[in-house]
Length: 442
Image (cartoon, rainbow, N blue to C red; front, side, top):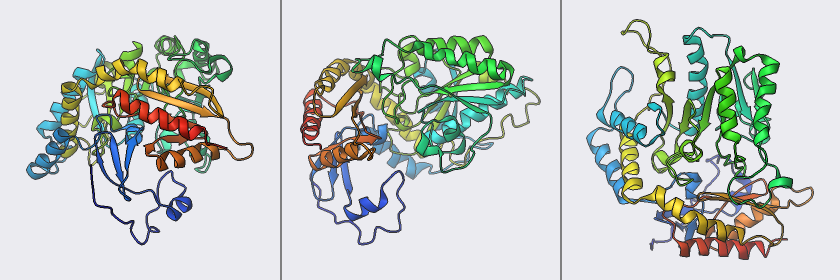
């Protein structure tokens, strides 16, 4: 898509950018001014292949007509409606549509505005659920090392990424962490789910023995940990977690902000792995990243625990000004339509083997110490430069952008998650260009 070149603003100082090396960026800005389908347009007029679906969110690609038109129409018809004691039809329609594509047993939807808010909501619901049932002592929360659950206080408390936690004080009390599932010595260069590591789920029994099951409200994990560098669940691991949580009356929350909406070739990772959690947190692909929106999907059991007492009383004192926003709901419905009409979840499943083969073709290139994949997600782990962590991968990121592809890095791991509309030629372009980049790294 040809666009006129647009210069960067003269003054970049006012915008304090998130998760960015601000000083480095502002010396040599990388500005995007347009997008269509699989490509961004840079401010210097180049086409940049999107290998990351934005930030794991543009699963249907960019500027898709059905979604754009739905937003335009809704903005002119009903721009905003309160969700407290009032409603509008699209919020209910979208909730029904989400329940329809969710695993059997998921029956209710609570709207938020982001993955971080979905996590906060799910954690609050877990504690309140037990209190509503007379188990008020169940307040402890269990996350996992290297887990990413957004950036609010609850999310970074149950999360396990050091740099996201260490500057912000003591965080929530009463939080424990399971060990992560990354076992490179045993599982390096695995295609799909690793063979080794299901036993790591048994660490939950140790935590239960330490604190008593009667004090633990919930366990939250990403079925596949994305932002930390694509850590896959070992075979049997998630099933074992579900077994232990059921045994002890602990709620299981799947953070599906990344894995939801087709990324693994199924509607949700819960479906992909055949494990039904009590709650699932979503965002990102819910609206194709176009309008901020998130949702917590719950079982009937979780929802019904709150539907007690007088009917005129508010059951849950929680929510957001923009819960179920009309324009976001319109975007969500149009996004689900696009996924269905174009068969994008099935497309992801069909392309996964080709993606896997292309990705693992990078084995043997300089500094590559591991490759991981599932669905249309992949990670290439690089050997770090002694004393300069993250520098080698960041160098790869910069060179990749110069060569016309967008990748993400976390630590010394390159992560890729292209829009589900990618074709085989574009996979070849993405992986081939990355191979050229890796060959140039110091």
